[in-house]
Amino acid sequence: MEDPAGLESLSSHVLALMRKGSSRLLNIRLLKWAHYYGVRVDWNLLAGFPGETDEDYTDQAALVPLLTHLEPPAGVGRIWLERFSPYFTDPSFGMSEVTPKTAYRLAFPVPGMDHSRIAYFFDYRAPDVASPDAVAELAKAVEAWGRAWASADRPALAYRRGPDWLTLYDTRGGLRRKTTLAGWRARAYELCGDTPRSAARVHRELAGRGGGEGFGPVERAEGFGQVERAEVEEFLGSCVAHGICLEEGGRYFSLALPLRSGLPGLAGEPAGQAGDRGRRPVPGAAQPRKPTAAVGARSGWVAKWRRAARLTRSSPAPRSNQAQSPLALHSRKTGLPSGVRRKSKPEKVWPVRSRRAVTGAAREAGTSAAATETAPGSAQTSLGSPLRTS
Image (cartoon, rainbow, N blue to C red):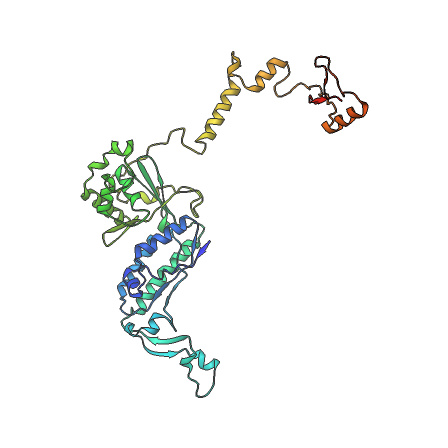
């Protein structure tokens, strides 16, 4: 499935200049969950909006290495000025020297024709735009993003969730890293995954006052309700420093996707060895608990059924008939092997005539079709229906 999403920028300032009504974190949120659910996003990055700065594009270029596990844009280009667009109809944007594209004069070489009345695309001059060098820096970063995405070893950033732990697998930048968050830190990171949340909101959720689900035994044992807000802010700040979370306007958004087998580029779990050296551990990092034997690919009713089948094959025959299977009972009663049944004799089928036919035959013969000795003056057919005799 493919979605032509109009993201067009990863800068909240540029999106505000476009009057998009979106933000950087919301656009990245769309890329994250579209990738998780297998939806391809057809998008690009635009430049050339009046009021933008070089910092808007250098910040996007610095952001790109953190997003290589998500689908890249098709490229970077300056906006086109089209008829009926806001930049064409609204003079407050400050577009000047608006003239039809040169191709219209070549396509319609008619002397005296006003090409501005038939043109749809226009050349223009926009005031206060970013420098070509800043836009070129972003374009270079996007090209590297596309190459990494198209490579056989596509970057990945995903996590596996456990009862009281969360393990992150990170292969961005050509490195392989693994980090484990334990206790309330795992829950805090996951809370910022579906939508951007502030540290205060995460603290309320951990304290059980966020209107969410109640605490289970694991959360109560870890003391989620005793977590201080300063601890939450410090932890989320460390996640931003390690590049597994983004922050804007006091709101945090987790970049890692929940691990699943169908996720492109995640055929196996990365081995976190080379990238762990020299990297500061995230506060609260711990080794995850090993799952029990009941957890695995054969958990649930399938494992129970197979386990019961093995016990049935290996255990001796039960003494009481109540615990035996229907096939075993059949074998004991008939003396035949289990699964083999004795052939029964075919039942004799007696011909059945309708009541009207029997009644007509009795009247023609002047007597009953089947007179009985127990009821004088009455008769019965083979169907058991009483008939009157004449």
